[in-house]
Length: 132
Ligand SMILES: [Zn+2]
Image (cartoon, rainbow, N blue to C red; front, side, top):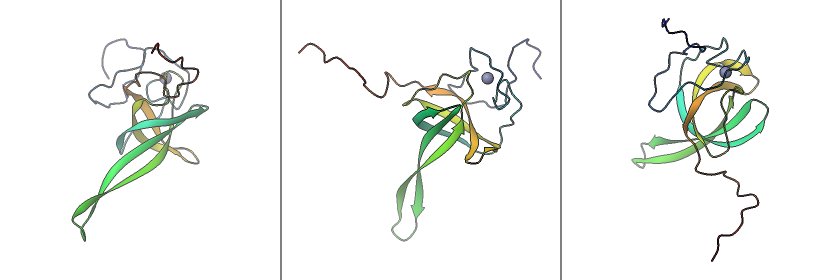
């Protein structure tokens, strides 16, 4: 592939705002440091749950054309995606996920990178009210 001595293996995905992670990891299912091949769909979605180990839940909103009413219908679905330890994903982040082979029973996507970090932690735990 490229002759630069980078520590990661580029998964061959070019997407605006997508950068390789700063850290490395030993995860075999990492698209940058493992042996997972990304092919198929690329989806940008918001992380709604990041409590599982190395797996995140992503909300994908999309439009479906309904011919009878000549309008779009808004649909949403949650997608489980594998999140390697080298990508620090928080709840509320917009991430790019790519389709892979099935990695677990309900996981067939992998997080490629964070497109937009959430401005602050999505759960305002212990937020002190600003001076009024
Ligand atoms: Zn990695």
